[in-house]
Length: 350
Image (cartoon, rainbow, N blue to C red; front, top):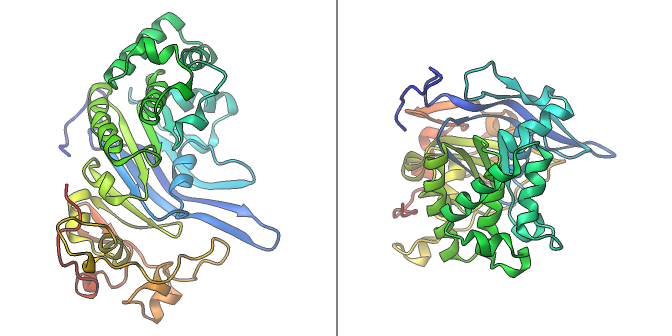
């Protein structure tokens, strides 16, 4: 991504959200369960950051923490700073009052969840959801509905038909696009997307991802896109962050991660991805299972499944190593990863 100054005087590649040492724990009867472990990552202004990991790896917790929306009895610790576009001082999200959080959510940072049908009230027409959202945040309803119509049109929907429909009268792709429009009606600058296309067929997934790229440019959005589907997000994102068992394993530019990953887990994940250009025999599932959140390993969380693991890996948490420009990996043996987990063909077609 090019580094150009924006109208605030802040570098365009500067973060709009900074997460530092963020953990989410649940207090169980006998011991704490860690569902996000010491995550530090930036969402940069104007980028699409893909967060990839297996189910239960902590992806959704990372997004919820960025809005201080982890539900009780979950406890979020660490620091999350949001930088308003006008160049004001950073906002410490975890220290906001309920009133301030209400303003931050939807108006500054908005979220799109996986199932549109579960997000809409089936007894209320789509128009009602827009009006309700605008009124709850004291926005001018007439002006807001004009923006809603524009957003729906930008997402290739007929505003009149959609606004006068109930959610169950729309197809899955239409309702998901309507939900995206609703999430943007208050003009937020950050869009957090939690598996937003998982319930859709492949063709509709690709269609929505293409629209997202256009929407990002027109409305100057920064997007965090959560998915378990690495190929899906690889063609969309500027950077990738790989999560394994509640910890970040590797972060870097998408093409660099796809072609030159330096973490054994990322490489194993890529080898498990279906690829039309490679024989089926080259696909290899990752042996073993991810750890229970209440019984995470003392050392590297991936060590029990890793072909490179040594005694040090089982006993110590790896530090971050810079392995290329803007690429970091948390692995003691990153310089051996390519040899230990070779990839016979290009695994993701971007």
